[in-house]
Image 1: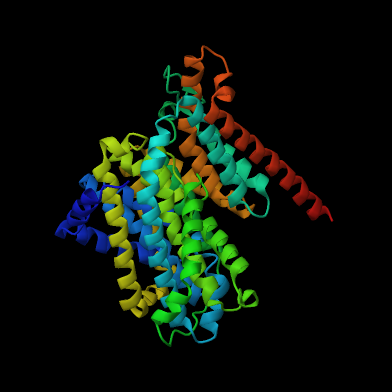
Image 2: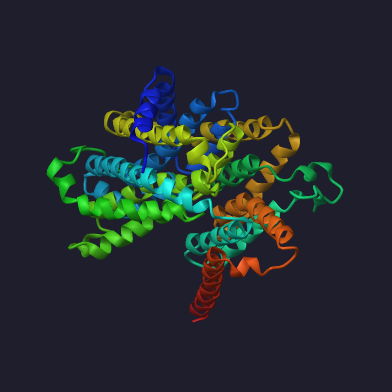
Length: 497
């Protein structure tokens, strides 16, 4: 059970002038970044991480959480007004948000999205409070064998769920990231692998430059290659929904909140899948299924509740297992380690105050996000009128400076440029980026766990399959691979036909 006295103390600390101001500016910045098509939550977190090195750890983590919550919500603005999701997490929002805007209900749609995001975050935080201690206690039983299978399962399931058109592409992207994670010195004997005599490769590929390239520079190239300028829908009408309307949607909000949190828990799945699953569940239980996709308020609030609930859901495995639930939470994991917080099963014992601080910061960021959504709807939409010819050079400079600032290595800038270029090519071929980045993140855990397990078992693979938890994870992983192959074969047959 959570310690409510510690929770109260965390809120008192978070409401202090310094942290409250940090929450306000970071959430606002996140909303703006989320609104801008192409500027993803992962990119915002990666760039902000490079600017927090000199901050106090509590202030830095508060800023990153504000950015995370704000950017996931901000994507709904453009999804509704422009029919262009500001972030991938808001893709499901366009299905009913934009039709509502075309029916001269843009403000009402924006208000519903705001309330849905607030309620989704609160549901996710409540589940975080009660789930994290339980998961951490079970995680104490995990050894190298279990963490090996957990990391492998995360890559496999991420590839399956994030590549809807061709699951094999997600699978390939995940294992490409895993291969790239093997570059550099291995963890046990410090032997340099795949360096080919190049000294810079011995240190491995840094996570932040790779993420800035895969989610930042790739968006710059994509924006340059796309000359289409979207038209803004009319923005008028009532903003906040009536209380009885919110109450009528409470079953949908609860189902979507739980579904979004569960999707966030699964390594590598994240907010966009949380939105789609929540939307599908809402449609399944709706009495007005025919309205979905044509301006359904229930569909809109389900999508926004689901993607926002996935944010606390994705934080749960970060804190308790040290494994990210989504691409943005992978950056958050890196930032936690940079600022001296060691996520894992012992965090509820060693850093319980940090966990409750994250809960408080997430709740306050959600409240700040709601205030901005209500009071600054019209001014924030003016940001969309900034010509991208002026915006893209600024983003490029931030990408370069952010990549270089981590270790002051020019090599990291080249890593950023390489990941951006390769990422753009892969995107053109419909390969998802999230599994690739997750493979890079989990590759270290997988490699280290495999080596430690083999040392402990004196080279025997038997414990990887005979320990109860390992056996369950192994079966789940192999079943996922089998289903992935079957799905790929069926997809190929459909293409031929």
